[in-house]
Length: 439
Image (cartoon, rainbow, N blue to C red; front, side, top):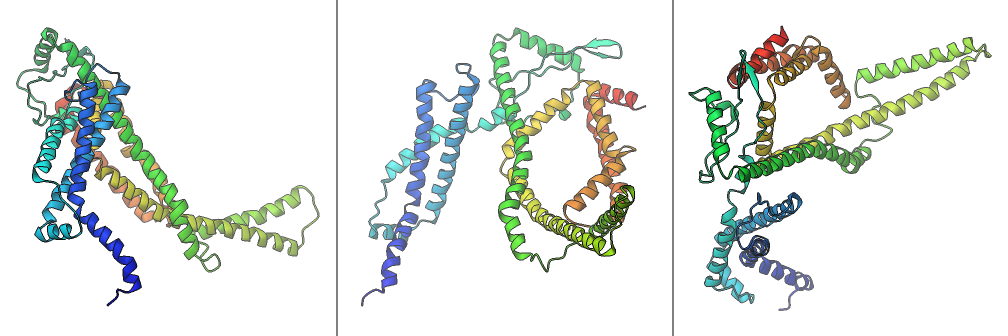
């Protein structure tokens, strides 16, 4: 019995797809092996066969950034393909192996597979703590002299890491650094240890490079958090949402106004146009316009106003769906950038807590006065009305007043709790400066 023509055409494609599925373990292992070979080639060619040291002073910053980018890319490929290899091997069974033999597939010998796996593990195991080296590095800053209660004290200087210290130890935040002895004594002991350490110069260079990487990653991630949602909004609005809304929203039957406020605004604009016509006739002493001429001009102006608000209504609907795409892009960035978030948190920790007491107090007062101060309700009212207009919603006065009466109070409570719980322990002099400036 002959096979149908359609089956004869589709059978080669199905067979090729099935062969591709059966070859998944071998293909994944081979790609992971190639990625490990590329990492090994960089080690042999540029680092004398040793581990790629991202803090090496042999090359310039641009060259090290190039090596770091290649290393992270190849590590990502190797780890993903190893995961794919394990998953495909888990689903593989004896029936699949028999089917592979029938289709002409010959799997490599187990010894060769074990040799490749051993080589891959040997290469990538050196870089298991790569992310930790960037996120947990301390910042070496120039010591400043601070006066506390009339006495001169040295501020706490970050202690340089011990090369023999365990890398898997979780770093403590600045809010958790509480000691039995005063900080001035501990900082003096730490400073003496640094000055007497013969490797302090190399440690300073290493810490500076790590701080530089942290700053670059943080600024790049902040720009991504701002630019990606904005670009997503504009692109989705122009290419996806806009054409769909214009197609499904008929120009003739679609409502001109989305809410009563738009209608009132259009009516006021038409009344002003009519009053302007009469005013210009009286001022310029022009011939009196007839009621028919005024009616014609009013109709033309009403058509222009209707077309304007029809575009605004359609644009408001487009903004709703485009903002959904923007929020989705923002959430995806947060989900897939956990390493960058940890680096950004560490960056802000060093920046905020590294400010002087007067700078901390100034920023706190400025922030609280803008968002929870006496004049903040007017700013919140403008923001909420702008958001409502952006989405084509009527500005609900009751909701706006309820929001203003509750949200700034919640923010003020959070600020006071943060000052009492954390800042008062970390920098009591900054709290004292804040209270003096706020009185």
